[in-house]
Image (cartoon, rainbow, N blue to C red; front, side, top):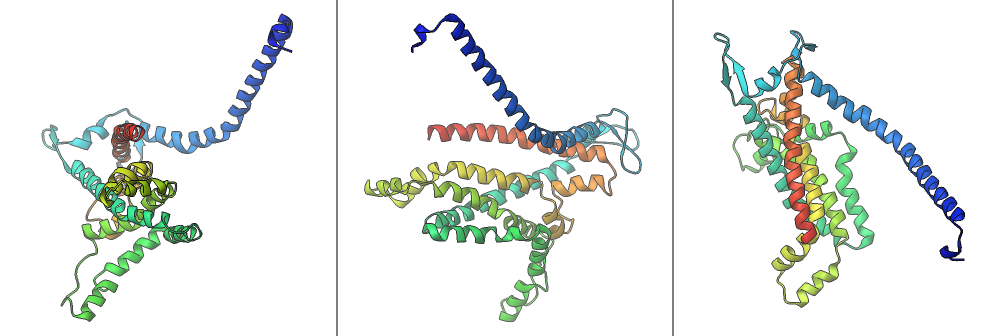
Length: 315
C-alpha cells in the first residue's frame, strides 16, 4: 500500500502517533540526563557561583566574609592602597606569580610532549599482545597518592638523598648539590606528576594510526623527518591537543608539588590562592584570584582549540 492510497484520516493519525513518539523519546532522554545535570549543578555550578559571589564581598577580620558588595578583591589584584594617603599604587607581585606559574606549566607541557610522544609511539608500535602491559606500566604511578609520590621525590633529591649520596660515593662531587626547594625540584615534580597525562592520549591517537600510510610515504622516497612531520604528527594532532590540555591546565594550578618541593618559597598560583584562605584570611581575594585564573585559561583555550581544530580539519 502506497502513501497516495491512504486516506487523509489515516495520514493524520500516523503523524499524530509519530509526533507523540518523538515527544515520549524526548521526555525519556530528559529524565535520563536529569541525574547528570543535578550532579553537575551541585558539584560544578553551585561552587562556582559561591566563589563568584564571595569575590564581590568584603573580607571579615578573622576569615570569612562580610555581606557588603565590594570590588576591592579585583582591585587589590593589581593595586594596593597606600597606608598614609589611601592612594592606589600598582603592584606586580601577583602578576609575577601568575607569570611564573604560566612558565612552569608551559615548560612542563613542552617537556612532557617531547618525552611522551616517542614513548607513546613506541607503545603503539609494539605487538597488540604487549600494548596492554605497556599501558599498565604507564598507569602504575596512579596507584599511589600524589602526596606520597611527591614525598618520594623529596627523599631522592634532598641533600642526604639517593642522588647526592651516589654522587658523593662515586667521587663526582665534594659536597651535596642543593636541589630541594628550588625551581628545578618543582619542575621535576610537575614532570613526574603529569607525564602519564600526556602519554595516554598520545598512545590512544597513535594506536589508531594507519601505518600503511607511513609505508606508502617511504615508498614515495620520503625521508624519516618528512614522514614524521607530514604524516605521523598531522594524524596524531587530536592526541597532541588532548595531552597538552590535560598537562597544561592542572600544572598551572598545581598546589601539592610546588608546596612540598618548593618549600613555600617559590610560590605558584595554587599556593597563592591557598594562602588567602589560610594565613591571609582574605577569602574574597582568593576567590577573585581563582576566577581570574579560570577566565585566563578559558580565553586561552578558546583561541587555542579554535585555531588547532581548524588546522586539524584542513590537515
